[in-house]
Image (cartoon, rainbow, N blue to C red):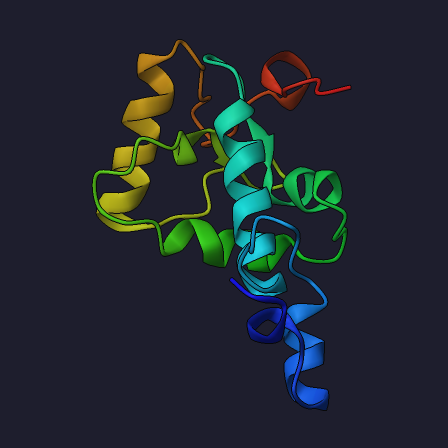
Length: 129
């Protein structure tokens, strides 16, 4: 790209391009999504984390619901370990078939879920520090 192609032409373009790095990354909205993907990909086998933990790790501590929204829109067959993300109460937030799919994936990794549907966060929570 030439410098004239990357330099902003008006105020609106400037707002969008100021969030791009030298590799011509997507604007900030995609940056949030990419940060969620990076953290979720790092959750170790047999461990879980919460939507809020992910939001804090990516620098948006009040964005737990948005983290859930990003994960909800994953493409079918994604290799990202989305099933390792649960709510702050240690429960699966999904319902129906999606709840069963997540529960099955967690159990397959040896994560125990008690009869009330809770996962012991003290035992299984990923310590990322």
